[in-house]
Length: 275
Ligand code: NAP
Image (cartoon, rainbow, N blue to C red; front, side, top):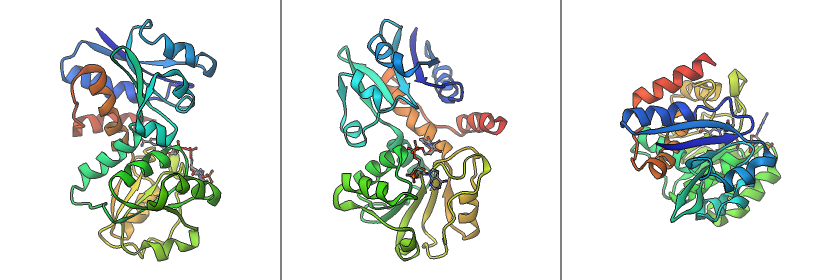
């Protein structure tokens, strides 16, 4: 039997086992996906001994996404650019790592709105943390012109400087001016979690074709998305990103490219709703 796991500290909250074990059953594969609580001081030992522990790979979550880089043999270009990883697998016996959050975000948006054009179009990213970095890296590969807006402007500046001329930091007071001809607005901040009010922005200047995304998925529909709907804008929540980011790891570990189905979405959404 092939086994994979998710490691973090704490780890009880992780919904990754629901996703991967659903796919293992759905595709009739002999495998198991577990949660493993790994303390920071045990991280290097755990990763170095991943095979001995019986795993073909693992997901890595908070607080290990950056520190884990030191314990793998190969990182791809995405990890190099974003400075964080979330998926570890073996290739030719060596421990390799990638980061799938950006891809998960991008595929979720594409799956919901296949007509969205990002190449040469403006995408406004709220936030400058780890998730923003992963999403910006993917949006830039899609050809978007990224604008970064953050509570702490210096962090937005710092992030923009990593990505060259396709990314610019903007101040809050520029939001309305920058809104025209924006294809995508995404909240990557933790504002809006568990029903707190989300980012409060004047959304009326966004084109009606714009997509407004939130990567927060507890609740499934945040106040930020509700506000966007009031303006007649198309919206997408964060749960689909979580499901799509899992596709890459599952394929690497178990050899089948899984599908994100409405049934899977509902199963995880029910778990989120139970709290
Ligand atoms: P992070 O690195 O800690 O960054 C947090 C960001 O939120 C920073 O830009 C921070 O601004 C901003 N922020 C926090 N509280 C704020 C407030 N009260 N007002 C304004 N800005 C505030 O966190 P992260 O790892 O990027 O994660 C961010 C969110 O994304 C979390 O809710 C996480 O659960 C979610 N997430 C979802 C997925 C998914 O699959 N859907 C994947 C990854 C993360 P400052 O720089 O000013 O502190």
